[in-house]
Image 1 (cartoon, helix red, strand yellow):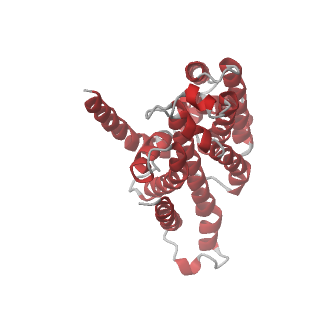
Image 2: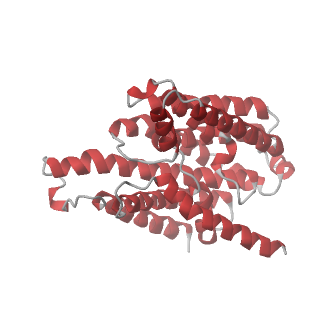
Image 3: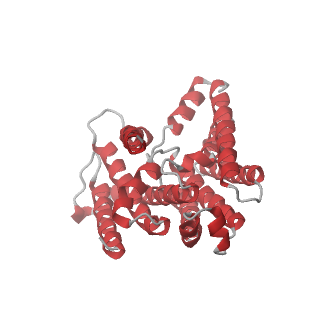
Length: 322
């Protein structure tokens, strides 16, 4: 399948998923009433549409982030969470819940974005300017460990059981009750991050030949590292700010599109974004229509989907290495 046909097919799938998401819910709203300017139209325009836009944007951001991570580290098991930026963003959001600053709907995502920014700064400080992949990976692991430990500390020291419950519930990841305010706050950061990540495409292709070969081709590995840190920080930080931690999208999607798009990192970026948007939009639609008393958290749904995929990937790699 050519690149253009693949992208058009994935875009068509995304449009179908988008339409299905607007239809999905406990209340059936006919298409003829979507613009009726009464209660049914409010359900579509003020509840389902911003939620669908966020699902598509977060899926696209995480899908492209995963493709860049796997290309940059040349590791098919790499995931945006490896950087520790998602953990830093979560720590910022948890801090707002712990100290009671989440009374305003906008403060929690702002704290999450602030946590992501702090994580990016610390990651850059730990990794230095060398552009070394090993040092960069170790710095990401350290940051993930620190942010995870501090998040657990805040949960254990929560002033009330209600605060602890709110923190744990938010960390599970969901798009429930999201509004246009959340879209306006986080969508620009996700778009900016994806544009930065797209600018790394040519350098990622050169990096497949090795760091030394990439430098001989004119790739500034230090600049590439900064672009990756900034792009991942914006996309993942804004995604966590909007919906909490939603895992496995960045791991699953590049593997699904790589056999169709080819193994050049640059060829996988746009298909991963489109496929990630479609996947998360469909997943969010499914959790809304499931016959349950309370809505299944989107983060749990993606973990239930991603864990078997991860195990299958490990078994396949084990067979190939045997």
